[in-house]
Length: 255
Length: 269
Image (cartoon, rainbow over all chains, first blue to last red; front, side):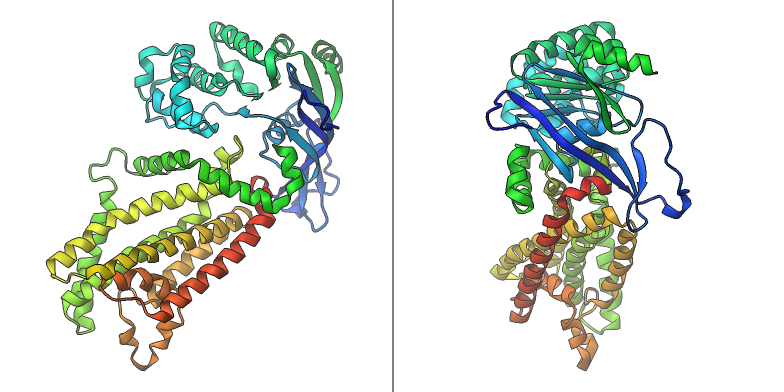
């Protein structure tokens, strides 16, 4: 648990549980015994015939400046929910989340992208979505433009872009202001080798100083290269945590 | 940031949400503006389609209903015009508010933004569309030479009250609709009934001795607080009192609802 003394702790989760009510499912249409033995969060029937998915159960960990954390585990094991809980999107009913500093969530490269507007307009919209002021955007713009390497394409409507080009744009905006907390989901894989190298260098560069990065991915090689620590999720619980290569080794053994 | 939130409780979280939305004004202005551009992209008339639609409705209804009620066209048409423009603002808020949060799922699930930001974005684009209809009113007062005078300026505080109520009610409807997906349909049906039973294209005088049927209708007062000044009249004391009372009740109810259930919105959508 984070106390005021732990000044270098940037993110901490203390016994956090997150569960989703599922309203679309008629509870009686689910067989009582339907507690499947996969690795996704447990489905449970709550009191008044409500169906509840326990996405995270009793999750605790903390990250200090410089930590780069990989979240690994099967589909539905709780990786994305953990990212969203750190980002403050899901406020847990049980447990405590502490996140100090500016958060840059990169879950969906297409968030806020208006395909009919130019690359420049979309840079501005995405930067506003991340909480930057118009002045700050003007200040960061040259650097963003340079990093995207999109050149004249930035004047074209984004509908002419490939997925990798949108990724460059989104990544450049998400990292331009050196957020204290950088959260990334699977999609980072869409980049080409050149971009991936650049992105890795950039993330390492600013995370080392005063930030943390959390990456959720199925690509274990990428996790091992980008991250220092790892957490293996299984059915919404932490199954193992420690140095990333150790966690990956355990995970590989089980699957 | 989250640590402090834990301590200060749901009330302060709701206040923080409001402050956040105020701070992010450039964002919701941008998004609200894009909503309008998006809707009318590649159409020649653009948002003036709604103006053209409204103009035709006002002229047609004004001509026919002035015969039905045996009133001079120059009197009824501006009345119908002012009433329809204001009702257009109210009804578009009622009908589209159900989509406020469920339609923003992609944003809400990807980035933490104040929930009231979506309300501001919604109100901003509705106000811009309202402004597109005003030229019809101006054209009519010029054509019929019925200058309302300085009293017309009272329409501005009246409209502000309407915007505040619109924001509150869209927040409530948006939250309730995120949880119960039937609500937008119920509200749409009710809005249609309200249009027919509220003096918008007919005057309360048409009810004869039963004019009280108009005065007990809260929507009559919400419309009248903007419509009366536009027609050169001061809103009655009754209208002002009722509108202020509605605003107070609306504020209290919505604030309680929002404070209690704000953190659940992300789970509902």
